[in-house]
Image (cartoon, rainbow, N blue to C red; front, side, top):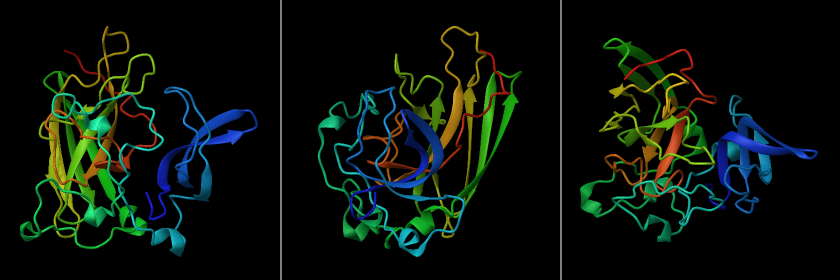
Amino acid sequence: MDEDGNFIVIGAVNQAFGDRVETKWTGAIVSPESPVPVFGDKAPHTILEHFSPDAPLLPHLANKMLHTLPLPLPCNNYPMLFAPQQYPDANTDTRPSYPFHKAPIPDFLPEHGRQLQRPVRLHDWVEARGRIRVALEDEARVARFTFKFDALLPRALYTIMTLREHDLDPSGPTRPGPLGVPNVFVTDSSGRASFEAVLPDPFPGPDRPGGNRVINVVVLWMSSQMSYGGAIGRYGLGGDIHAQLKFPTPMFQDLQTRA
């Protein structure tokens, strides 16, 4: 969010075209008063301003200070508890929005040395870049994911999550999971980092009963500077996990693994 409580979106934005609602990957400032449909349906976002994520940002957008979402998460219709064993009552917590550099870190004291000292602006955030290589090994029973990153936030804790085929299935969504355990890396003073993990059978064939393919990966800055074992976070996207890199469309269609 920005300092006015509006969403800063680079991603899938719903727009009305007559009686149709279409989704386009773009940039927008979106009002938190946007209509919220039933999970699985679409409603147009209330867009305050459009921008292109591929073009240079106008100064008033480039200088927007990034904030966490307040709790409970606004405009949320996703019926998922992200850390059911650790935090079964996470959806009952309330707190305001915080600038990224002042986001709550559990048990933090000033003498511990918070590494992020300055505000994070939108122009900082959009500089991030990543490269991924996926290799099938052990006769296609596993896949090795290798990442290289540049221009992330410096000296910061990040994690990587998988998005699977059924995670957003309205008839029975599955809980998004980490890409490996641990799914953690820390950037250097220039925002560079690398990460590697091996997953068992992440790309089952379409005819496999119970198959739930990995279709995307998401790089998350952790405003709590924590990781959560087998969960991707405590509250969900925007609350304590903040998606900085993601593919615009499903990926890995040409890869297939076996059990």
